[in-house]
Length: 422
Ligand code: KG4
Ligand code: ZN
Image 1: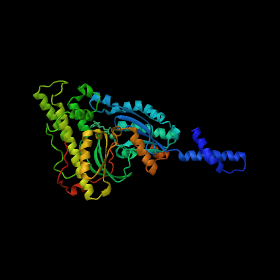
Image 2: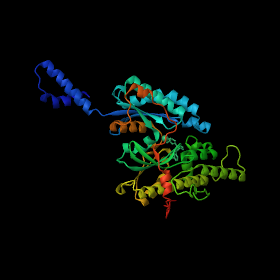
Image 3: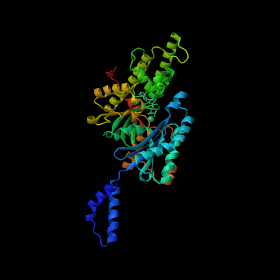
Image 4: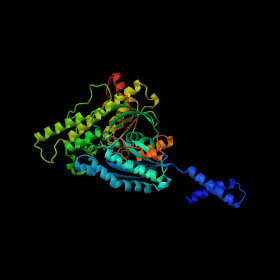
């Protein structure tokens, strides 16, 4: 820093004319401060606690991750077979202070130098959201910083813009443990839903499927989440060994449904366990084939609804033809098999496929900080006033935007040829 200021002095001092030595001194200091201030990068702190990850990060205006920390509750929830909200609440409350402090310390930026504090306020588990929102608001008020409320799904969708040039409008597929959404991102504040799930999300189907298959009893899979464990075993399995019906095939919209697949998996496993007299914690011999077939069925449903969404986008001319882009994010987007299938779909439909690296697809503080930074730069959705900040409440449910499902349905889109993948 000293060398930097020295460099600035050499550049600026000769140009400043003053009458007295003392005036000269103060003018020099003012000029230096102004140049240092102008060249200082804007930085935003992001806080995430919408589900079972306590995350915080400091991100700069050009997308540099200056500091970050993430505490995952996954191992504890795995022991209970799913997320137990009061446990998530206690773990967030125990960790939030240290996660935020660590992220700031690692960034090398002081709290004083942070421009704004962004925090997830919707959607998510009430008992999880409330910890982050209370902490973020208190910190903003005590440090006298602007507060930026963040929509968790918008943050997933925009993370890619921290890494790559992706301009509005674009199509987004968000697949996670709590969501399954096909969305048109028009601008920071304009989102339209093309398709959403009527029941479970794919991550939920994978997590519950892995639990029914008792995959946690396989030592090398014991600390993996359901989606990861199924992907791992599916690599050595036959995706055509078991038949899972394709959901929603009768409807000409982009709606998702995963509960039927989850039910078929349960029935398939029950039947095999009975047939092979499998009891207790033991695992069926066909586990790899079941995982591969289940993953194939989930992928096929995701790919088909996305293909129909692409035809809808083309029919309604919602994206510029020369720049068809599909962004895929959310925890399930870590799955390489699903990515490959979507990549084939994009090639055939003339789309550019962009996905953040797996680490940025699952929940984290970086995506919240980056969405905060996008809003900070656009001067949109920022709260400066004490009363406005105090009035912010969490919203467990909050659609990302207007729902176009009826319009999709009204077109009665028929697909001539489904894109094939193996
Ligand atoms: O986005 P995320 O971290 O949290 C939510 O907002 O839900 O997503 C978590 C979900 C879990 O259901 C997990 O099983 C799934 O992402 N997941 C995967 C993989 N890694 C995580 N699903 C499929 N394949 C993976 N490799
Ligand atoms: Zn998420």
